[in-house]
Length: 164
Image (cartoon, rainbow, N blue to C red):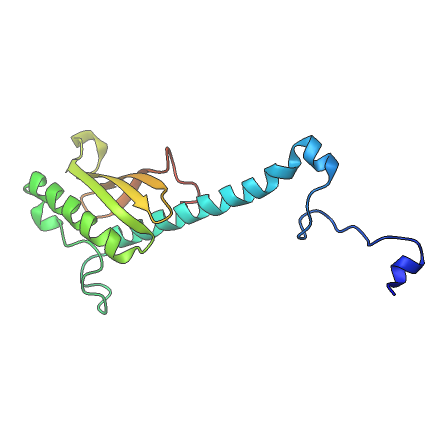
């Protein structure tokens, strides 16, 4: 026989969030559905930010470095800076090829690149529209400066990706 039953008390209630259902007051207050959704949204934002960080790392790497991954990273675009249209086309082609190959959470990539405006301080602009394996989408705007450093201008789903 359960010792608690002998004393006339039922099982001790557990605090909400330890595998139990929320109480009536939590449901009436609206808190019952709010916390699990916030946790799921936080996980979703963290996953998107992780994808964005990996894409930026991939675009910042130069092909041939690291040595054990010959195809990882962008080819050296600085040789094509005298022909910015050709460099922009090469950047877009490389992004379409590299991102799905080295980021397993990405299913599809659409890339558009063009020379950056002269007053922006960058050489090339790259727009990426990415579909993730879970069906979500990412939109990133990236710029490459004269030293081939990659800068995130804007990113995330319908706006900036937090945590980047």
